[in-house]
Length: 357
Image: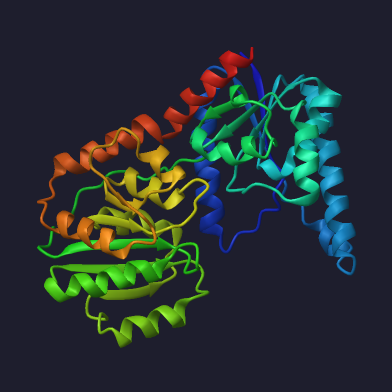
């Protein structure tokens, strides 16, 4: 049995209590999966008292908070004789190197949607790399840019581990309508690329109307622009902008949906896709490394170039002609359990621990 410490250096703020409870439940499930063999501790940087005390000096406040939290983590590692430390986020490579240098524990960095670095970080990360024992990525393809920039010295240090899971379940469908229910859940920003989806819907509607797209969004940077496009192109009868959705409602909505659509240009982990797979929803998503990794081995899927609405239209045509059934939903759910569930992630991390020790 190994003592493992999972550290989240991110300052954690939540829009509401349900978001916090959902994350804590997911963390608990993950810990239970691993703790059958090991002792797991999770430390979250959620102490906001320093920020309030030094509100006029936000930069100093942030640095002081990080320093105190780092010292606390080091003290904990030494006191508990922790053997494995997993740090969430490549941004914290200096903190990870510090913990390795002064504790002697094996230190693992987990990728969290970071892209390759410029300037100071591009210089410092290769220096810190010699102290990092392993890196966890949503597929090795996600690590390639860091290897090319020499931020990571060797692919031998890189392991494929799904970043997070979902506690959603496959629930019975109440009503299966002849009109296919498409769903999008995420932010309305440029990276999520909703304009490509709306362009595809505009073309699709010319030939058929046996579908409906519902858009749930947590942030609305491009809300007005997208709504104007929808109105001008007369697709409001097949597109509904629902707005924010409570965390405890997402499971129900996904289980009543047929197709999950995402046109993202970049993703670090793809939590919405993972949640949809947990609920047996057919994915039509962009061809990007994070999604490629999550869907590898799944037959019930379609992918497309995120900047090619015609390719997306062709995929939508195909899926609208397919008759959905419980067997298909269960097959998608089985893929989730084998690849993305907390138990599957525990197995992936167990492989990393075996190689390191």
